[in-house]
Amino acid sequence: MASGKWIIAIMDKKLQKPAVVTALALLSCFFWGSAFPCIKIGYQWFRIEGAGSQILFAGYRFFLSGLFTFLIGCIIEKRILTLKRSSIPYIFGQGILQTTVQYIFYYIGMANTTGVKGAIISGSNGLISIVAAHFILKSEKMTWKKWMGCILGLTGVVVVNLTRGAWGEGPRLMGEGMVLISAAAYGISSVMLKLISHRESPIAITAYQLLFGSTVLIVIGWLMGGEVTGFTVKSTALFLYMALLSTAAFSLWTLLLKHNPVGRVSVFTFMIPVFGMFLSGLLLGEQIFSLKNLMGLLLVSGGIIVVNRNSY
Image (cartoon, rainbow, N blue to C red; front, top):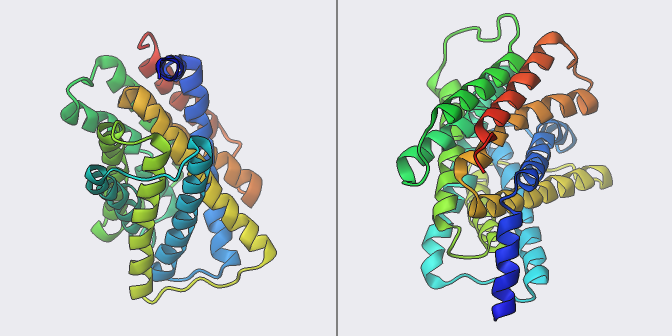
């Protein structure tokens, strides 16, 4: 028992080191960023059309991701992952907020707005989580460094996505409004995850919140008449990667949030659209090398440095 506590104490210290936090957070963001081109490719290969099919596709993906996470957790912890009865309402709520609500609003919003607007607004989830932590967690208050880091990071996301006439008409509730609600749901869920991280192991929380939230997505997709077809060897391999990237990203993120302040981790989410941009250029052939893209990357990196400087 004493040796087990000693090992846990060492792991806690390692997961708080700046280099470790940076490496694992960026790896998570890389996985999430790769989802952007993968989803676009998946829509073509699986012939996804309509909000119902999009939500059902997301539900299938995250349910499989939850199963992968559950199986990996059983192997790592050498036991069948179970939840204490008192933890179930909290983790079910986390699944509804982090998986169900976020992706319902995201898919409805993206059906009624442009990709550029969606990317810019979605990039604000890191800022939202840092601000939400200020009001929800007594130990995490906003400082001038956090404000400056958030502003720099958000400015970088805007610069990366800015094109002539990008904003077109004014914002609409069923478009940009829904995407903003999605970003808010994710930002707030990061803070709520911090509050429940002590109840179960990070991998158990990740597995069950994905399973709970994705099951609700699947039911909603079915009720909306959605369908997912076009399974081939190639498309199935893509689908498996999408499920595995969610498993890896959510598990690492939950682990980092358990051992670090929300603001220190969430600021890295500004890198998700940056990774998405470069991977879209690589996989989809989109033009990415331009002055605005390089400026955006510098601003995002500067925001991360400002928030994390001397904060460990």
